[in-house]
Length: 74
Image 1 (cartoon, rainbow, N blue to C red):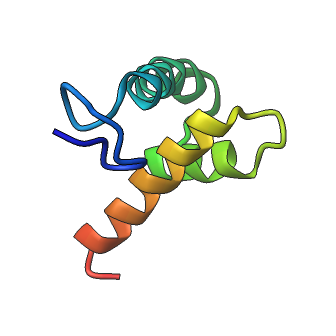
Image 2: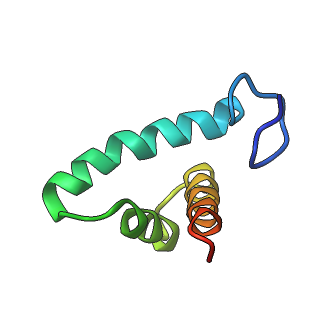
């Protein structure tokens, strides 16, 4: 199986690096949601725009955001 983002070998939908970033995004979303009453899409947008966000997390956020738009037919 290949990573959906970078094409590296993967045991799931993402390689180890992107999988770790994905898990971190999920974990941190719960914190943000509890404090800001923020939607998943808004959270992803803020992650992408944040200059302090790491490259792996940004790549995952961009991928998830574009995937959501495709799923919505946008």
